[in-house]
Structures are given as structure tokens and as C-alpha cells.
Image (cartoon, rainbow, N blue to C red; front, side, top):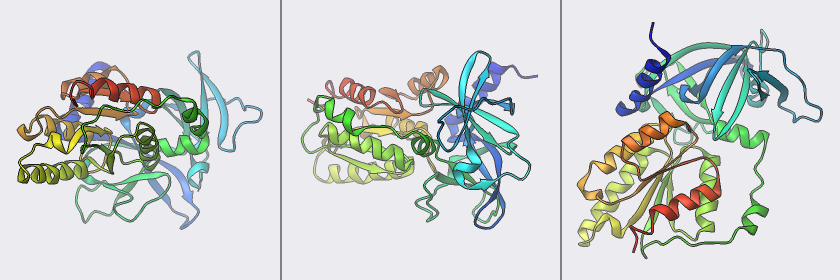
Length: 322
């Protein structure tokens, strides 16, 4: 039997080939067609899967909160995922997915867990780009591994779900924070990539707060293609990419090309020598942070703390943007 550490190492090493593992589960029948569809969450976000324990309701809890559970001494909030996405479980809430996400631990109640599948990020399409955009779905995974396959899974946008259940109060806090503009070379931008609408909104708010010019894209592939265009423009003008882009800010989980692959591509291309890359991800933990350093990223910040993001950008840019 494989050791737990071996399984973790094997799963982490998947990122070297633009692959990942997706936990598939069902939430019950949807309100539109009355069908039971497959949903997915990246296995890296899952701490454990347990049979539904006894839940203690909390007085005055939110509409989608089932209450809390005491799991080995840690009190964890439990959210009714079928109710959040508009599904009705046929057999009840039988399984609890305990997740670690953006420095928080929470559990999601689901009807059943189906499988763990290993996919290439090329099999995952942006929900927005494919015209299937929903507020809670970040991408669509083609499980059959080809363009003609009909077995699909909806990859849930956990950031959007948590924001909907417990909205972050940003406006007053931002007004109280002193602005400290980034040291950016005139004429350059920050190129940012994230597939989550909620994450893009928060990133844009912080970059605007820092008075930093930026371009935002939805996938690693879009970011890589945009860098090619900017590099060609710079070369035609007798300049380098550093005259166009001062920093790349990328998520890790993205359709078509993940942030690990994007970072390796940038660091392995002579045209982008000296271009700093900061990874901004909800996939926290020592294993992910070690791998971030392994692909050559210049910085890593866990989602979402505006102060931490600003501090990381300030720490990377001054030595490179004078």
C-alpha cells in the first residue's frame, strides 16, 4: 500500500505535466432538468472525506449553513452545497467534504462521492469562454478526454461560493488603508490571470487601490499567448518584454494551462529573463509552497488578503522596476 506521503508527492508531481486530480461528486437533481449532474473540486483542496457526522445547528446561522461539527477537536462550519447550487438530494446529505481553502477550513455536505479522476488541464474549459458561465461554476471538465466526449463535470468556484455565503466587507477596510503605489516602470503593466470571477474582482480592486496598470485574463493559456504578442511588439520596437510587462500575477488552478506550467514556460524562455512571476492561489500548504519555489516563482501569496498581496508585490517589484 502506498504511504500517505508517497500519494501526496505523486499528486504534487502531476503539476509538472499540466495535470491534476478532480474529486467528482453528486448533489442531487437540479431544478432545471431534474437530472443528477457531476460536480468537481480539485483534490488539493480536499483535506478529508467523511460520512456525515452529527451536526450542531447554530442559532441565527445563514441560509446555507447547516451548523458546525467537532472533528478531532476542531469546530468546522458545514455548508449545504446542494442548496447553494440549486439541487435536491434524492438520498439525503450523506457525505461531508472537509476543505482547506484560502487559509480557512470548512465542510461541504454532498449527496455522494463518485470518483477521483486524473485530468490534463487541456481537458478543462473556462465556463465563461465556452458560453456556459454560471456564478458558481468556474470551468467545465471533459472527462472522456476528447472534444467529442459527452461526460462532463462542472468544476465549482469555491471562491464564489464562500463569497456568496459569507461576503467579505472590503469597502470600508480599503478606505482605511493608506495607499502605497507600486514602483512600476512607466509604460509597463501587471499581467494577471485567474479563472474565478470573484478572484479577478478582488485582484482588480487591489491593483486599482495601488494605482497599478494591469491587464486581466482568465486562463494560463491566455496569459501565455498575451505574453507572446507583447514580446513580439517589444522586439519590433527594439525593446524587451520588461518595457511592456513588469510582473505576472497568476493563479494555480486554471483551465487549459495551470499556473505551474505558465511559470515554467516564462522562466524557461530567454525572452522573459528577469520577468518576475508571483503566484496567488487558494492552494495553500507547505507542499504547494515548496512546489511554487521549485518552478522558479518569485513570490507566493495565499488568497485572499489585500495586505499580503500588496506586500508581496512591493517585495518583488522594487529591485526589478527601477
